[in-house]
Length: 70
Image (cartoon, rainbow, N blue to C red; front, top):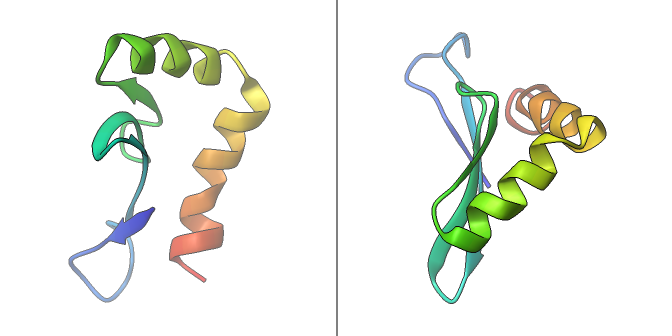
């Protein structure tokens, strides 16, 4: 998990949450996209499951406020 910003007002803050297995990112949540993206066959399958779970998707979207801007 990491936060990226290029200014002091945090208006351009980006929250990125990587799911890594065996040194490879297989799913990534990016707050600018607002959804999970799968990079492997297994990652695409799980990204669809995460996307169809509104609670998990809402939680990840809220993390930019909770985790980055705190």
